[in-house]
Length: 330
Image 1 (tube, one colour):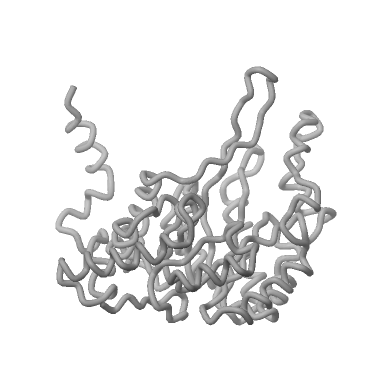
Image 2 (tube, rainbow, N blue to C red):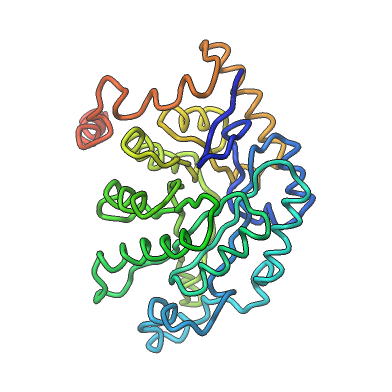
């Protein structure tokens, strides 16, 4: 079975790529991921806060109104709470690149464009084969209109694209009012690929102590449905590569991603729960399924269940909503 795929010009031996996560913090773990069959590795993020705490643009987007809520400031971690500082991150990228034969994808996480371009170039120089930009911004200021938020993403992308030659993927939120239009704008601005979608970790409320507390839950299988829908809608409408992230837990999920139109399936939670061996197991099961259903390659199935390929394309739109509600039996 031919499991090869192409993501942003990178020829990969299969579609399974470990997401940006603590898994890439340890060099031996990265080697274990490669041994298990990972076709590339997305290194955990270098955060903007690590690059600069003083940038005025960052200050504007993150501290507006926090003077009214002192506890809000405690959400920003101290420098020693990060994995590694900027210089150590670059050295880590270099060590990973020298230790594995699979492509290494760096990751930048932040809000403003200040400092990103310089470090994007340094990550490229450290040996990264590609870069993922994760603009993690929750729009809470009622004075900032949507077009300003969208322009921020485009500005960040352009700054990085002007600084590097390696391909750049945008990791997007699902909360744009027009996802398809935003993707097209970013592609026109130079994005080589898109990762759908970023998980915004929602805080919880501690009723005993009356505190708002951070809360992290590993992804569940049902969360894949949102990326699948948009992969299927976007496939064939843009030239950029497509990746799915969130909720991929078994070989069937990977196959669905391919059929919807994705080029790679990014996995994290399943590996954190059950170890790197899951990659090998999923690849074995993929081959069995493909043989049973007479697929000789991943490319044969890619996009076969996209909106433009299925018999009922409106199933990805409002008609599906009505059908589901009307089909429920009490």
